[in-house]
Image 1: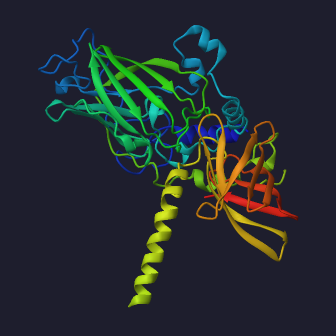
Image 2 (image 1 turned 180 degrees about the vertical axis):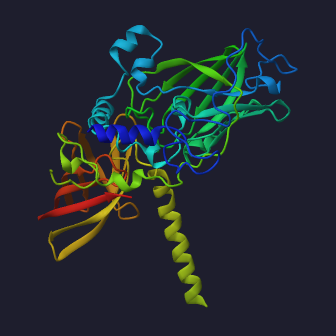
Image 3 (image 1 turned 120 degrees about the horizontal axis):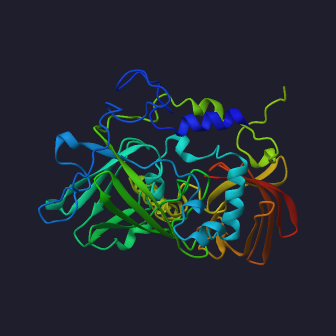
Length: 292
Length: 133
């Protein structure tokens, strides 16, 4: 069991998970995640939040001396990340089947998490892993592009031109869905629908359906901090909406670099041999292993 | 030439019927465990097998679906998941033939999970195995 946990931890740890460590910056090891020049500048005091000419916050950097990227930190179980203290005690408002499936995934130690197969993690999951990411604001194009170093090398387009979601958005659902955004004061509000059901909501195995409607709010509270909140409204899996949130830190001095999760993903070699004791073998993927 | 054209029309017609069903169903499989297109067979014994396709959906309140979607589909009048033991109960009726399907999910953690159990079709009783596509 411990071996499985250790293995999964490695596989979900960015940059060291599925790569051989021989590309893009030489051999890596635990604690060496992330972009070029890790361990760069220390967080500086009281740098003003940069702004675009129209006054909206610049969620990235302007001065090369103050470059960097955002790193969210791991948030494995959203029940504990709910904003409302009472909701935190109660856990997520699961429908019964969703609660049972979440419990099964916990019992099997999240071994079937699609992210360890290098599949994309959309929704709030993209903002709750260790992988670096950044916003690229393109006001002249009225869109914001969010790029992720990891999680299958993905990017998200947030349309800022006032368009609605397309009517057919649920006919061909996608990993990251369809996102439109607007500013409420200094907060970027991103509204996303049209998710497929390919990823887990969080590492613990919380789930969503293609009925999920996600509202995310990004507020750069100072140069080195972003407050994040996400309201998940998914009547397919939950009895009511819930809101999660946390702070995201600015990692100064670094740049996003190439990372290809699929390259040399060793988890695939072990997956079929993982059987968790105490869980009905017929319910588990993977072959039962002889006892030693 | 006419034969080729006829074949082409048949292929396009088949695609037109099946593509929307598959596109709707193939949503990567991490949501409701029954949602998706399932294929396999049933039969009264090992030598007498019949291919089957089952399509199921989840609207947040109920499981809906049909056996062999298409012009000859048998819509389910009852479709239930018991999440305490991951068993499935399906019922349908068409042209005077009643279908009662009881099974249990295997490989729950996989998108290629299966349902295995007993299949009653009219006065015939057999077993079945279907796997999510």
